[in-house]
Image (cartoon, rainbow, N blue to C red; front, side):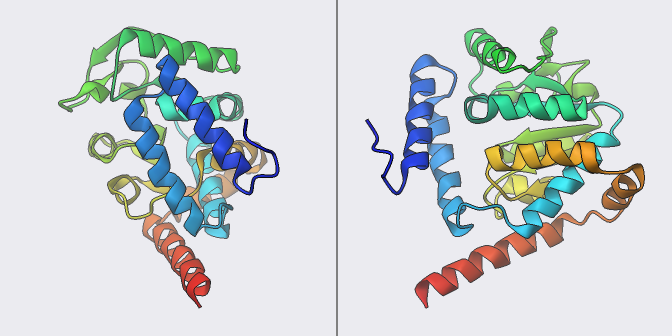
Length: 243
């Protein structure tokens, strides 16, 4: 039992939840390491959403709102952490939701799709094919889903698939707490924030932005600016913590 007055209560509850999801197969054991790495970067953000991340979330909403065929790609960690938030963003944006896994088995795919559906998402689960030029199982996707998308939101992504999607001409939106990662540097747009904080911001902006605002945000997008601001925010917090 985690006491509610523990200073790390929310973090510890999340860790327990992810561990349980690993025991049931929704999250891979390797995914727990990935979560811990992201949590370390969240410390440097003060576990809050920065002003630049809020602007990036609005830009992400503009990209989804103006897309021809937007897709939200979900892995095990994202489903475990943010299934309801994924469902909310789908309702706001009209994007398809598709499961894509590095440690892929039919059983895991089915479990994660069920979890997302129970949270209110309409999961696209047509026949998967090995369509992406990757040597691992993230190559599997649906032809009418991610393969045909023009904009793909990939929370908690790994860099090689992000690079492949960009090389295929797709615009990739990443949610990544590490502004130094391959994913963050490769994506069209990176929101440096924790996924359960970022996704509702995108959903809210989808319903609030005008067509003109969407066009302006997409036309003026410069991911290097967002990454630089995130790095400066982290460096400033670290500097003041040591002062």
